[in-house]
Image (cartoon, rainbow, N blue to C red; front, side, top):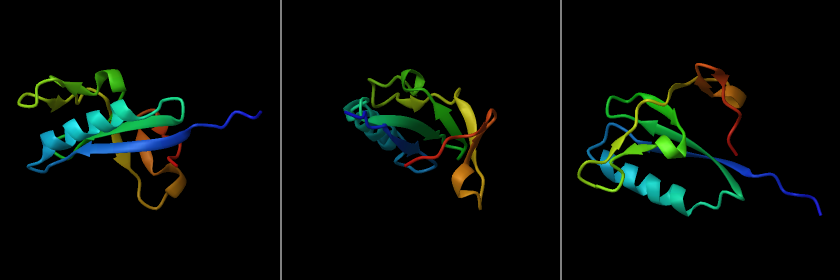
Length: 101
């Protein structure tokens, strides 16, 4: 039986909104519930200044168990969106990211 490849999913969260912390909590819950056998999860956090960061799940959030203190760990690689390049739209310092499904 042929093994199916994982579906590559991007989770985009955070942002400049007044609901920033709620978005972080929601992302954490979604990520925790995803089946890692079926999905390859790419975590893209947006800080309160609007900067995008590529994070590992283990380094995703600071104070993640305290809703009043939760914040994005902005130490991940900076990430940019390159307009007009559908197959290489997300770019990290190491180069374009593999596409998302």
